[in-house]
Length: 156
Image 1 (cartoon, rainbow, N blue to C red):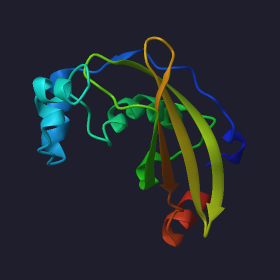
Image 2: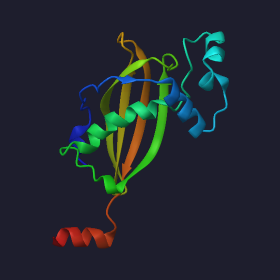
Image 3: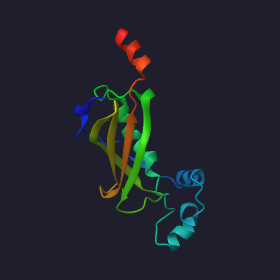
Image 4: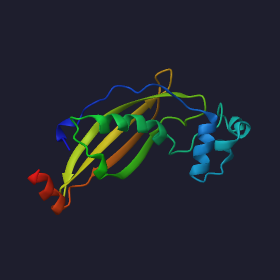
């Protein structure tokens, strides 16, 4: 893992159009039975334009930003060693069906801990007007090679 990528900002992703059925599918996958996630009329009665995405939905959009990191040869991330360490969200407003979200990834920290690398990536998401909606913050752990693997790699 290259610590020099700390502070790197990747290009904005293509806009992601949040669909009503995607929200419903995600809600079912996370076992949410909230009518706000499933019923447009219930969401409208609660003051929203359409169904509201569950709080962890931004991971769907964040996936495209993290793909940029993983594909960056300068980052030096061995995907076979990546485990997800932490996930957080900071909302300005809820995501609703019909939102068109664009995400920009910033590498906010790269640390070494016990031979492992930890990279914190912040994906800031804005709507079509450019207004902030949510920031998804992930920490990925890139595990160090096992001692026998490290010896094999060094010999190669």
